[in-house]
Image 1: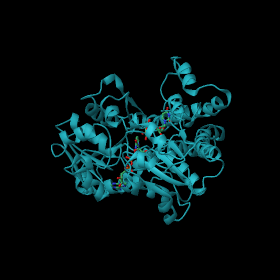
Image 2: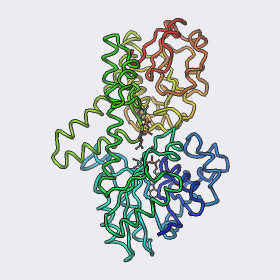
Image 3: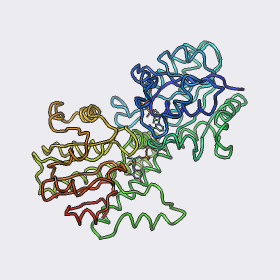
Image 4: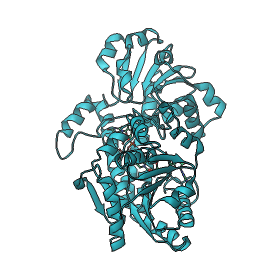
Length: 463
Ligand code: NAD
Ligand code: UGA
């Protein structure tokens, strides 16, 4: 079975870059990415590549090559579903904010809407691919909706979770550690798996394309994120012990990472992990374990989140304590608002929670982030809903210039590991700050001893 026409529902951080690379590598397949968010689709179609809705290094080049050749962005969801032989579902699956499983389970309403729409519109057989991250056994529910509400056409469901990380999405898609494809172990299921394998095989070596049953694939995605987040919480738990004992967390990370069984990656102590997925996916795993009555399993994974929340709070408290337990009316500069470098994504960024904690103490925050807009920062704070919007607006300002953000501040806090922060003229920043001048390095990226030579009092996580 050769796929000629792909539709992807959801033009977000996953749908956009993933389909751009599939289209780039398969010029003979027409790929249409659809979304109900018209502004987002307009931005994907903008001639000015700086206006793409997602900032990812290298993405503009991929889009420029494939767009309007075999890659299209549209709001006409029905037309794209009808024309496609393969449909990727790449919509958001946030944590539920209501009802049963509130605050834990994944909200699958967008997934169900997609399944119902596909069932209604499809007039020919389709392969439906779960690209979104989903609780194990969701394919069962999708299958039931498609078969019970469809027009009598045949559907095959595959699970093909995405492992890209933001900031390195293009690189991760072009050279993935592995591509995972789960499907039914029947003749038709195996044919559908093969059709998707063929698409990836145009650029991914076959030994890196793993095929499994549906449930292993769905569960592997949640597990991969849980293991990665667990490493961050593990090193963060050690960072506090380093601070009280005189050990240096970076040195400890190097020493343990040299053991090939542990490995060096994902051992960077930080103010806490953010991003749209780690917390959501672990909460989902905890919820699933609890729903099967596996309480010890649930408690084990929940601790990863508890540690992460503690780390964010601990960083904020350190700032308050060090500034003589009073920050009311004091200016504090934030370098970075995104949840990690090289992305404009701010979902669940530690910066939001630390800002909220400091603003509760009536501090004024001035933020510089190279890719995040002032509007986004306000919307992140308003989403937390802890204080009136007017207060958020008066207490937090966004600056276009980092030196302006730091001017007259009592302290600078590094919340994102943007490379450019290391290249600043820190002497100039020091000269223009209130004294004593403090730096709180929540990412451990600055050279502590040279800052101290300038005159700063420096707190670096894990040191
Ligand atoms: P996103 O919010 O950036 O994008 C989802 C898009 O789907 C939105 O633009 C929304 O308007 C659209 N949408 C929702 N319902 C729709 C419908 N019925 N019809 C058409 N469009 C609809 O989300 P994302 O970050 O791309 O994540 C998508 C999924 O991929 C999630 O399950 C997430 O867990 C998973 N994932 C994300 C990442 C990441 O780095 N962001 C990585 C791997 C997996
Ligand atoms: C993560 C996974 O790395 C991807 O494989 C997965 O596809 C994705 O989630 C997803 O499912 O959404 P992402 O959240 O984009 O990707 O970025 P990461 O590089 O994993 O970073 C997550 C958070 O952990 C960031 O806040 C980062 O700063 C923090 N982190 C990461 C640390 O604090 N220390 C580290 O050593 C590594």
